[in-house]
Length: 139
Image 1 (cartoon, rainbow, N blue to C red):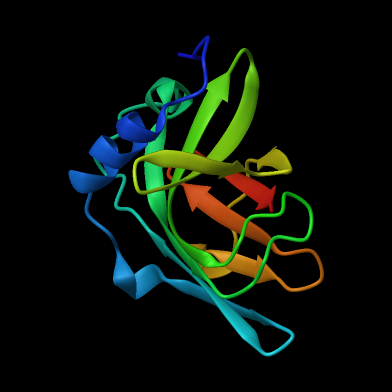
Image 2 (cartoon, rainbow, N blue to C red):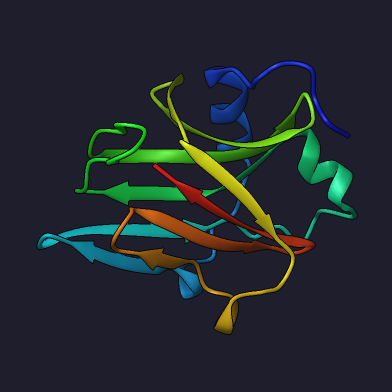
């Protein structure tokens, strides 16, 4: 079920602590000789898209690349997706603080090939499949 408010840093950090990552499905990309890696969370516990809408930790982003749209600095971030006031959003948390938000988030219902996160070099965008639906988000 969609939320009324954006998640807080402590909320994201708490959900990230109890999550399990799936290193076998990590996606890696490069831009200008720098690397970005997204290790997705295992989301097998989700029963329907409403649980995703309410907000879920979806993985860890380790990036040497600065976001060219949202200005996310290089670093390591817990990544969180939520539907807030009817719109999908992706948030980046570090040290208990929300330090950034994706500049754009587009829901796409077809899974990517291999279901691993896919990096788009030209615009620092990621395509991820989250059990029920997929998203392209750009930073």
